[in-house]
Image 1 (cartoon, rainbow, N blue to C red):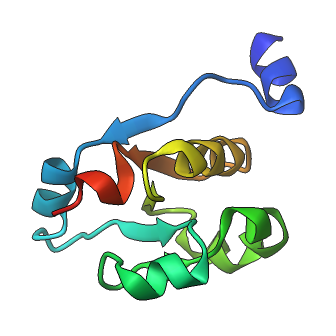
Image 2 (tube, helix red, strand yellow):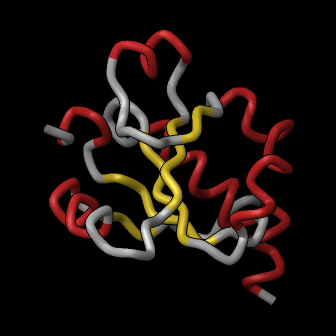
Length: 110
């Protein structure tokens, strides 16, 4: 019952997180995660993690269908500091995706 109410109300706690160092290790493996940047296009142009998909947070709900083909893969979501990506993780988790939030976002990505 609690899970049902959480899915309706958008609750369910925070998503799992991953550190920049852990992500760098995962990106060396054959089964790389999908990278989702939820910042604005100009932020993405200035600096991004290579091969990431850009869907700004404000467009995520209307563009979520673009990610359907990745439902069986882990998606690492990032933004500048981890705040917008945390919101995106909640949305994606509620839609049935397997996600992790990049702790500290691009500020921690060297």
